[in-house]
Length: 324
Image 1 (cartoon, rainbow, N blue to C red):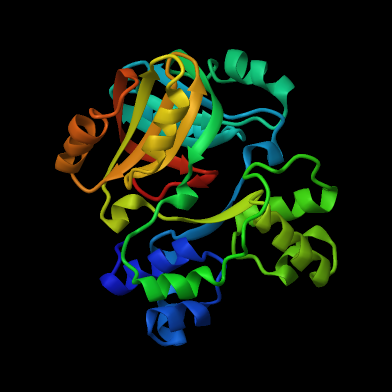
Image 2 (image 1 turned 30 degrees about the horizontal axis):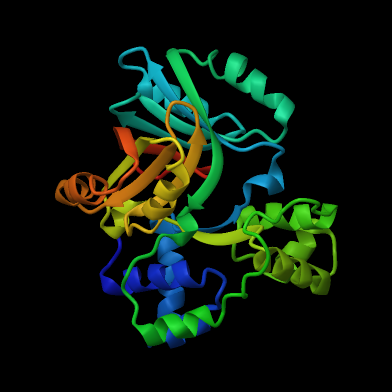
């Protein structure tokens, strides 16, 4: 299971820019044949686990924001605990880590009244858990949909960006979704490249209505298609989560600055012991050292930080990981 050279990387990079673009548009932008792109896309999905998912805004599918949970386990049980947590329907991201905790996960219940039972009863009932610490997500400043492989030329980027609907409204403008809109959002959440015909069949509406609803959700950024593939296959084998405590009043500015860093995959302000959560991808420990000592070290407003290295991802955004 591996990518085969620059052509595969170019295809991933093109999908990151325009996840719903047709294979013909991608082929034209990359200067290769449609059959070549189709063959590469099929192999990447079948052999490397590449998916295009719809990243649904926090408020579209839930009454509350996600919980970022650090878990200490009985020695030797971290892998089993992570597997069990991944079975929870609320599990959005689950990984085995070293450093601050043994397991890190993001849990997102649909209803606010489920939160207490999840954190106080169901999660602690998982065998092998010694202690948990939860921090509520306040605002996402960067998500996986924004992380990019920097491989494409300006002309290639221009051609691909022409296929992306222009954004309008607030990024989290998901309140007041109709039943049909919610159904479309759920379908796109599972398959970010689903066609209007595919969506219409699942939701039970006409293709023209499905097309209009898809366009509206994408424009309002209620759903943002994103490429999901294990970063190690792209040359980024080192994943870390950094918990940062900010000087009072500096959390927002700190998160905004970190969100612009090229290694940032996910950045959020959180409520709890930490103020900002940074999830980053790195090619090597030397790149991580550069980030910690120079980039992060130069930022004002940081009063404390904790580093956790991700050893194994069990699930990413409800999709079971393929690495071990």
